[in-house]
Length: 606
Image 1 (tube, rainbow, N blue to C red):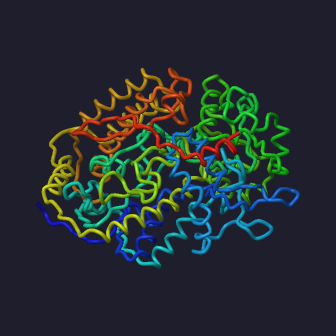
Image 2 (cartoon, rainbow, N blue to C red):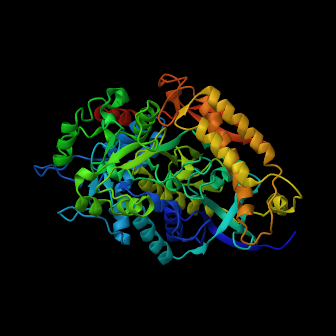
Image 3 (cartoon, rainbow, N blue to C red):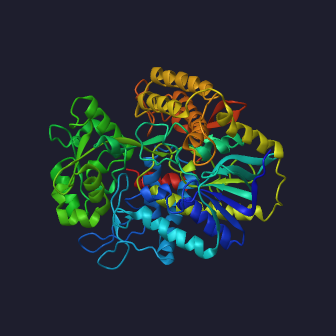
């Protein structure tokens, strides 16, 4: 076997988004040596796509009479549990709601520049599912500011960065993770990282769908490496369809249109010019009475904010996505197959000040001036609520030495994530995972790297280059995207899911014999050969879990099981483990919520 580079750290962090960078800072401040590996370049992580704001109950906003709105961690806790249809891990949500304000103020101390209220406090905007104005923002470029800030801090505390490195396998010594193996994307040269603890912060997995807001990195590497190493996954059927992705021009379909547009007063219209979110059929019972029932009432809310009956466009994302889907299916869609999102009534100056990125995005990509014309939008694959099961306090997985944080970790968001909770998730649990990994690393020595594991992975990676004939990975990917987009999208049925599963199994068999031309230098086809195998396995888990959960809850909308079943399915998480080359699904009871948190739901949940 050829030589490979070896690096050794106390803590290895995989992923350079907000969760990974915050884990780096925590582990370095705990005194550990830290290596950071990223698939792309530093500063290019998917965190920059989170535009609208970071949710934290700072309670900075005031009513017209000067009184505070009344936000608190308790209300944020209840909103997050409701938004997740109570499938969330209550302890994760409690930690999250309590610590988010501290983490946001910490960003400010690191140098983040937030928009301000007239009093000089961090400005907050409304978002779907949040009772109060809770999203602390920097125009519509909040994720970019968060990455800039955390990157500067991480460089300051000292870290070793390995950019454009793809990791493909976690290395184990017995039951324990002791490092990772991968290759440099430019040269194909192999590399081994030895570590006392590994933190996965690899983000989501949207690229198996045809239309997604996810960038090219989102192929499920982290979640599948963890699963192959023995880690448990949780609620993988829960994949979020953001209600407003670009649908025109065709080349830009799926690119995110921030929820901040609706938070700043944008309204959804069908082809008849009707503001269809006022249709009472689209209002879940849990939210009745909390949202405006007429356009006039919604307009009053935009003016004074004192009335908590927000516009129905600010219902949780799963609700709005379903409504848009139903409008289009009923023949009331826009010219290009979506619906209209109109913010023109807010005025050009306001739009350019509050939504500069959206103005520039549509102007550059679609030759559309959103100060004068409505946007055309349709749901796009955006976020994974499911992921690696972790312990709330430390981010530890079920495998010793392995930790996870951010989108790759499941449990916090339940069946549906509220907008803005992703950025606070990554800073709250990025820190906790970094602290947990550092504490663990101090209790163990470096494990033994098994050459047989490396040799097995090298053979697996090189096989497509050495094959005389075989399948094209791009063709496999295209067929997978078509199957997932058609059969495992917003509306799901047993028939469609079984058809999708059959297709995935066929593609997995074909993917055992891939053929890639050329050598390892600058060869995207070779990268795709490994990516597609991760995507196929991740897709199979999503489909199998969607078949198993026979109800509609959050992002899981089963047309053949249209009702929400709180008596049974509302009390279990679906836990996935890999056994051989197959997946086992277990129905595991949710942890019992303590009485004091149940009382909060009674108090604030109405």
